Image 1: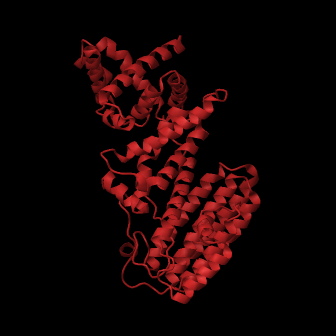
Image 2: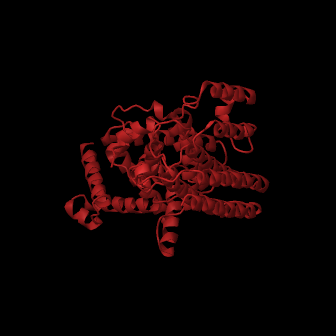
Image 3: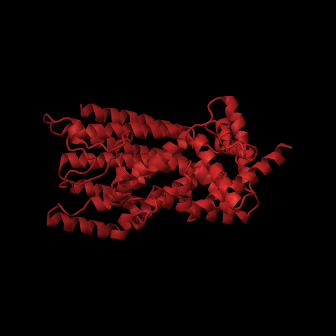
Length: 179
Length: 283
């Protein structure tokens, strides 16, 4: 299994297979990250594709300075999400998308999880930008604290604190919703 | 403050144990009896959040996105990997330049290679393909080009189907048919391989489950990564393209407006017949 660094170097030299491998490795995670940030399925799909097309266009500008490739990719996704949400904020709020599908297998669990997705999307809107970012990266994309810290350009301690405060806030919102 | 920091560390450690190591909530709480009361609701919330956020992209979307990304990859790699005029005699270079300038100018041609049928640059794209074919002398290279152009037609069909343009889907389907017919003729003229098998002639990328990518290439280049060097190698690539194109088109059927479905079904039938003929000719 080639290292991420060697894959990126090959991709920068126009090696299509290397870039295709990076794409496969990160596609679902970027999708999940955007799903929790943006919420609307169609928009999430468009933006996920755009992240990789932007990455393809600007891969030559990526430099290894101790920052992993995924951090760069999430930075592109983050910028797109922020830009998108800024534009969207000017318009009336759009209802949450019910078509986002959770990966639960049985019809029963799908129904339950779907409710949870909606609840979660609604709850994350009450978080601060940084808290939402931590939740998306940590639990949707399943990244380690160290990696999240690099992506967000924060210390690991700061990320842990954000994670804690975000979970407390989500807990509070969920309890209120249940009542 | 220090207490908060300590709690955050414990909380995160529990998270790692549950999420990464598969430890149960109870096991984790037993490790930290003093913090258990505070940890429990938070960890429960994390489990709900984690489960809820495990959304998956739709398979049709994934297939379409992958296809479009690979097309973009090919388009990006093509100009740099192909010193288009590097191998041809001077007279051919001059002729090609004249043709290209007459058609629209170099920048336009480069932009045209990404164009879709609803773009004004699309005729330039088709004309450039014909010039490329005319300037390529080796049968194998022409066959590879032709197979790559067939892939382009499939992308265009998907693009126009997505936009609900049944007429354009029909028009491009005819072009796809022409390309696949031409491919049959070209591969029929290829010489039989020597003892080397397809495996030896087609370098397979690491990490395996990727379909081989077809890259258009003109004659005279050295052996490229993933490039077929004989008819057996070409067969592997064409079979991969056929399977991929077929899967993407089928996946699109549920996505497109009802008005385009019939045209898309016809395109699938043409694609199936065409590739079957090509693969038979490559036997």
